[in-house]
Length: 141
Image (cartoon, rainbow, N blue to C red):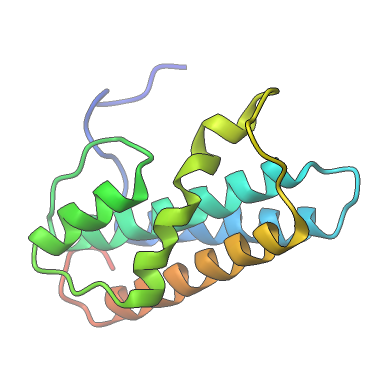
């Protein structure tokens, strides 16, 4: 598989938010399955929040690197004039789930409270992103 425009952000904001919602749904379903590791649930919650933030940035024509650091993405968004509510700013807690927790040897145990916090943070971020996209201040929303 060869991605088109390697290094360039592809897709429309609506596609990014649909991917975010799909990741959130996967996390929600997986959170109820005891055979699915908590780390994997939190990974999909992180992905949901990351893609939602990127959807908003894309809609406002704000360039962003293809990174997983939510705090850094939010800083770029804010520097681009996007107002970030506190409950979305809290999504920064999801960043370690993007890479570190996906492999054996993660340095701390993820508990059920962590899973619920991750899901709630992703939900808040997607709700905010959808409102931002509906405000129509960008392309393809």
